Image (cartoon, rainbow, N blue to C red; front, side, top):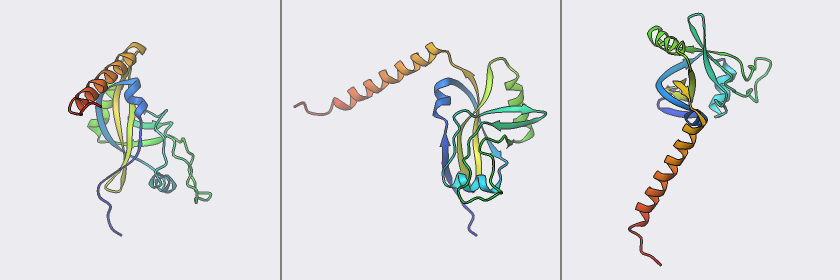
Length: 158
């Protein structure tokens, strides 16, 4: 069997960048069952309501939705089960210490295959207020209009 190489995206959490200020980003592995991996290879997953929590000295990913594998039998998995995150001890301690601060949470940003293994990109994040979201939206629209004006500058008028 040929070993896979490269980076193949599975799912993105675009809502996380809209709802949170992203501080620090870390890559972590996941403990998965066979039918979960097969379902992920079909590109089926959702990170919308997912978050990471601490139990003991371990980090767990909760509410990530991986639909049941269509050709699975009685060995199929639960779609929203809690999954263990795999990190080095010092990375885990750093994240646990960050979570203990007031208003900080661990949010998954993306899910992807890296060299045949499923990885999740976790971020320590602080929640945005509504006025922060409006400000970011207005800023994005202003930069888009400026970019459009610059690109139209070289075109002849009709």
